[in-house]
Length: 469
Image 1: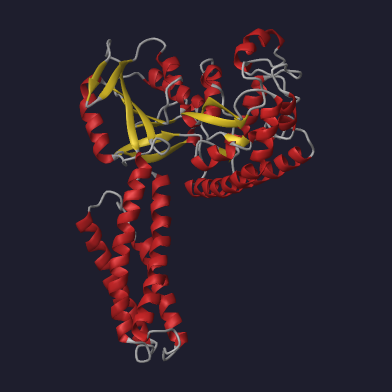
Image 2 (image 1 turned 180 degrees about the vertical axis):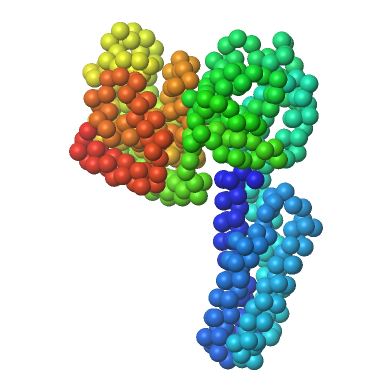
C-alpha cells in the first residue's frame, strides 16, 4: 500500500473506532439505566470504557486488522468487525473477571454495547470506505504514473500494475523504446521514446515513473533516472544502477514488483498529513478574514477602476497539475495584453516578470499588494488543496512552458501562499534563478518547524509593510 494512504487509513480508522466505542458505551449505559446516576460503581464503568479504548488501540496497531480496508468487500468487512468485537469483549471480560470488576458491572451494558458497537462500526466503516474511494479517485489525490517498458511486455505490465496498485494510482501513458507510432492498450496510450522524449515528459502532469525495461542499456536508464530526479519525480526501477544517489534510493514495492525507488523526499507522510491539517485549519481562518475584508476591498476596487473584483488565472500546481488561482484584482483589466509591451522593461532576469512602477497596477492595487491583502482569496485554494499555507511559488502556464528539468523540480511540492523566497527579501530578488534556489532549498530542507518559522516571518513581513512592489 502507498505509505500516504496507509497513514490516512490506519489513523483515520483508529480514531473512528475510538469514537464509535465511546458513543456505543454511552448509549448502552443509558439504555440499561435510563440515566447516568444509577450505576452501581461509576468508577468501574469509566475504567471498563478505558479498557475498551485501550484494546482498540492495541488491536489496530499490532494486529493491523484494517489492512486492505478499501479493497475488501462488505461481507469481509462485516466478518472482520464481528471478529474484532468478539475478541474485544472476550479480552475485556477476562480482565474484568481478574480484577473483580465483573460483579458490579452490568451484563446488560455489555450486551447492549456489543450490539450497538457492531452496527455503528459497520455503518461508519462503510461510510469511510465510500469517502476514501471518492478521495482516492479525485484528481488531487490521483498519483499519475508513466510506465516505461518494452512493447512486448507492455500489456502484461499494465495489467499487473492495475491489479496490484492502490486505486488512487492512474497510469497516464506507457512509453516503449521500440514503438514508432502512437498506439493504445487497455485505454492507455503508448508513446514512442523518440529523440526529445525527456523534454516532452517535462511538461506532463506526472507524479511517478515505473521502469521495467530490461533491454534498455544502463546508460539509457541512468540518463532517464537522473532526469526524473532533477524534475523531482519519483522513479521506480527494479535494479540498482551506478551513478545514482544512494541516499535517495530505498527498497520498495510497486504493484507487488520489487523495486528500488529513487526519491528526494525523505520525510514522513505523517508529517505531510499534519501539514494538510494545518492548511485546512489555517485556510478556514483565512477565509473568515477574507469575508471580513471582502466588502471594503470590493467597494474600493469598484470605485477605483472598472472590472471584476476577483482576478483568476491558471497556475501550475504540484507536479504539473493545473488549477485556477484567485486574488483581489490589483491591475487594470487589460493588464495581460499590456504586459507584452512592457517586456523590455522587465527588471527580473529569467522567466518571471517584475516591474517596480508597473503602470498596469491601479491605485488600490498598489495598497493591497503592499499589504498582501490581494492574496487573501487564495485561502480558498488552500482549503481546496490546490495550494498550501507554505510552499513554493506557483508558476503561470506560459512560464511553465519554458521550464527545463532543473526548474521543474520546484513544482514537486504543493505551491504555497508564502514561502522561503517571499520572506527572504523578495522585492530585492532580481534573478529567477534565485527564486528557484530558495524554492529548492525549501523542498530539500522541508519540515513542520520550517513551515512554522516561515509563517511567523511572513506575519512580520506583512506587518512591516515589506510586501510585493
